[in-house]
Length: 501
Image (cartoon, rainbow, N blue to C red):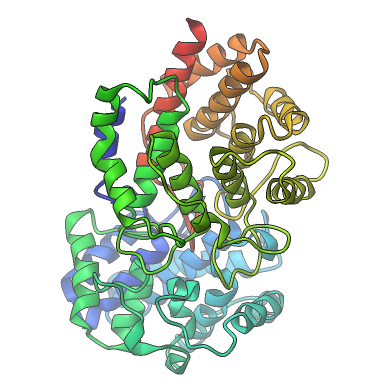
């Protein structure tokens, strides 16, 4: 495994987000604007078509991820010259699309409460385009019927405003389709690097339908595709996101944060985050972001405070709502993990457990527990181990009874080989790392001896710590942040060593 020093150097590049079939399919549509880019993306897509003919994450299965990815890929493949050149892939894809949308499909079905980012906004647009291309969508009316109410609710949140770079809907700007450009503030969509909200798919849509052939958007996309293997990531650039999460994972371990040598090692990364922290607003995924979010801001506040910096808690508090904290303004449904990370920030800020803000967040978290078990799932990550493990780290001292019950769930679900996995089938290194972090934290906090369970988990993790990692994170489709996952694994392996001492 790498060291935290080398991981942070990679995190500073902000390019650790995995490529997705959905975003790559949008780049493949650029055939009339940049034939070379389109071919690179198309080759990537065809090499990663799944055995059943669909596209998306093979594991874990997520219906929304698989449907969006397959729709986008098939639209690209059946456009222009691609259909003739890739007849075999098209034939398999048509069958997969039929299977995904037919009543006979066996497997998890559409669950709008568990959907990927912007699914209810994007899916109807893609289905309309697929219909124009003659792609048959079984039970289209039934699928759209489940989406229309939530789509309208989200669009109402805009209050009649046109979509611009200061609104989260810009990340899913392709929702406007070929005929809805009037929904957009065309001259106020692009970021300084030419992208639309750092999304390759949104940027490709912009270059196709909003400002056809836009050189800045195409240059942004080209810089990603040419530097990689032809795939387009879920978003780029994300160096603030990767740095703060790597440092957060490091801070789980028993390091001396007052040691000048340690501080010097991490100085440039802390400086970078602090320099882009906007008082009263916080930070976003990347230093040049025009849209801050409560999740990244809360974790950054936690990290900066632990390393002796002085961020203002007001940047976190601006996201406070009546019953929880929002991740973004215009958000329809709250995020549990964001509120967990707010709790961590409030703890770092010295808030007492009786403070109304702490009590509000805890009440929201208690009410959001999965029915019948002491775990929490969230809209930013597929696995309950992510949110539950982070809750234990954030809520200790605030609600130890809640943490104890969550620890019980983690212990009861440890597999015989020492690993964890929320989904049927394989366990993952990422989930196992989170559980080790939670157990090690609880052992230090409560004095409960969990060394045997930690050691058993460490034995498994040391044998399964290398990539590739499953795409457990949620954007428009599923993705993996390899740098952040490696940081969690490295943190967990250190905690195993510390537990054995």
